[in-house]
Image 1 (cartoon, rainbow, N blue to C red):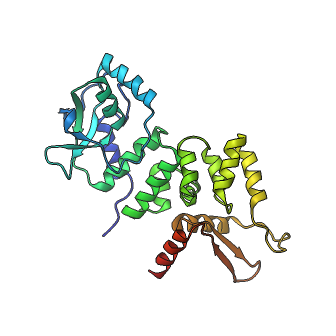
Image 2: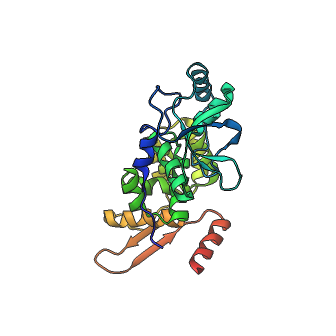
Image 3: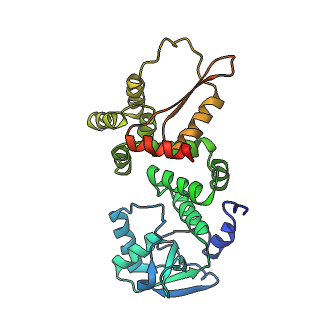
Length: 291
């Protein structure tokens, strides 16, 4: 079956809601075609929503605005595939949460028949365009689009207006231990810090040092270089070319484990190293290779 192109039908869908997929209370505009009022207790969150963190203060501010002005910008919903007579949020979960705080009982909505791929795609684009995803949520959303719906890094980059290197670098974050990813989610380290930790043998220990000392990204990069395992007498080896580095990034993103390629200059042979931090990661790699 031919894969659907990323963004198929997106412009027409966004036109239905005035071009901004999550404006909050927003400004009053003409009602879009097909708008209706839906009881808030019949609306369910999307379980595949890539955004997992909602700032309480922002929700309270939006709730105050909704109490004063109401919800002007409609939610985008689809019939809930698992609950009869209910609806699932495609775009607008932040408004739905704030409306509950504000004590609103009915919400304006546009209902569309969308499949799972389109729902996830719209949820991702909604949040990425608003810069609402943290780096871990963004990486997990890209991984979902690739694993579940067959999108490639090139297709994601083209459809989302991102560079291919941005997609690859974000996906590499998923190779970090869960403890480090939690530091990133909580804002204790930035995406720049996390990228520097991807290449080290013990990112968890280095993350603790970075947090305790309040190191900058540049200082973290220097710390990571110093923590790298020494290589046997290859100090004069030329730097890796861009193609080799891109291939390392692709394999790292695909295997979710750090990959290093050492190609012999002028020859056709070399070494490919895959580093794992736990026996579970080794087991997962063995299962993947056996398939």
